[in-house]
Amino acid sequence: MIPEGYRFHHQGWYYKVETGEGPFFLTADGLMHQGLEPRYLTDGNGDYARLRVDVGQTGFFAGREARTFWEFSLPTGTQQVVKVVAPVNTILQTFTVELDIAAVRLELVAGGTEGGTFSTPLPIFKTNMMTTQSDYVPQITMTRGGTHTGGTVVDVLTAISGDKLQKAVAASVSENLPQGFAPGTYYLRLTNTDGATATGIFRAQWEERP
Image (cartoon, rainbow, N blue to C red):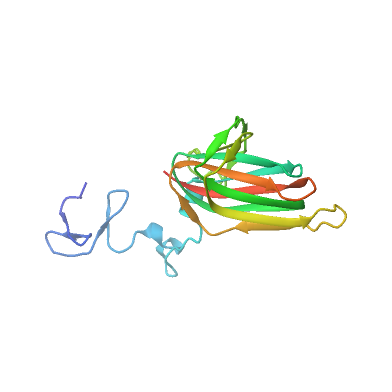
């Protein structure tokens, strides 16, 4: 609702009808303000005011960023699969394998054929658990327990730490470049490619864009 005595200008601001004075901007409270709204300035818009520049992600503060982890133990020559159901657009920010022993290959796959039952959920937490975040509930689900073949491998990580517990050196590999994914079902195939039981931790973090 435009306050009485003001008119909207086609370039996006308002002006006083009587005097032509402007530009004015309509605040969230429905008030006219000349220049930037005080909420965009530091120091209470005082003598040392500076433009607020937030280095954080909006999705983080809005509660739309989430994370998960999975402590795995894979006997030699075996594979475990995580089914990822994403009902909304998603930006994958990072996924990581921290390996204690042996060697593994992690594939992120689209399409293909699943089998068995995916019944064991991975825990999902908001990255922002402060009291000021919104009541948004993450929509992505991750479950493991079934099998998967075929599909298109859209990303892959490999980690090798050695197969002797006394000599193994912990290894960590990660993908930290943002990747955008449309709504759909995806799979994470974790395969032990070594001669010893592989143990470690898988982690992932993403932002949902409903």
